[in-house]
Length: 417
Image (cartoon, rainbow, N blue to C red; front, side, top):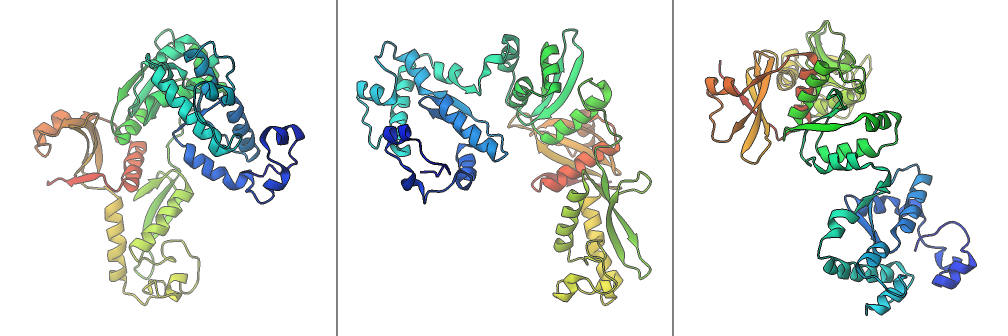
């Protein structure tokens, strides 16, 4: 039961037997909304007269400011296709005619159990697998033209970079996704002005599987710069706004600060937003037992807050020796900067027996490639034959550093000089 926060209309009381008194202590919709989102995530909603149930859910979520979107299947429509010539397709009469037992009519559990049994029967009758192939719909796909459907049908569900072309073959949009098919479907069903323009001009979609999201991010950035598609946002100078810098204060302590990326100083690492930089700094301060005052997180003319609760060793008031404190700061810098480093980053490949590899030489990103698991990639000649050169620009450096920060399981091999 859910309390609709209004009186129940008499005809609904007569139909269901549910009256307002029965709902006084029932939860309100906003109290169960999160659970509905959780249990329907990545699911198809199957219902008898699905449009009605789905419309109710969408309306209630819209009132909460949430855009609820799920795939649906309607057992009324499917029954008409697979069991034609029935006297009635109401749930009660249809289940009686088919010998499906129903208990607790017009209650969530009773109706749902009956619908499950009906749906199983329909799946068994569907020898051509029409339900699986055609009957699943996202909202009402009726507005999706045939050529867009055909394009979507040919796309993979893999991670990679995709290119949307017009009738002349020109690339009008480039993107990356962990599920190319899903992302293109969103482009073709979205109602935004940009999406509508793309839908009107699209003639074909080509793609390149990358397996790794890091490869997709790097390729997307490079391809957009190279091709300058008309529907990609005008590229900012960089895709990051803030950076982590270090400096030594008058007492000899290494200080860290998150500041706007200025292009003059060499940053330790970069961030898409100030807030992501602050989040990183709070965690790093905790992981390396640093002083909040010397990392710019706590403004004070005396000790920092952490010192007062015995979490800081006192660098803020010169109690800890600078050389001891600076060792920990240097360890953080060493981990998150690849300046002067020679290393390989190993990530997923396009297939199970393949990996992607990214080469950093003397702190410079050289490029990426893919290798078979049987290859000895620490052999320099083999490695050079695998790597496709890419630009060592600030955007690519940001993409790599950000990806390493967020993906703790990524494998890094330090190369010997």
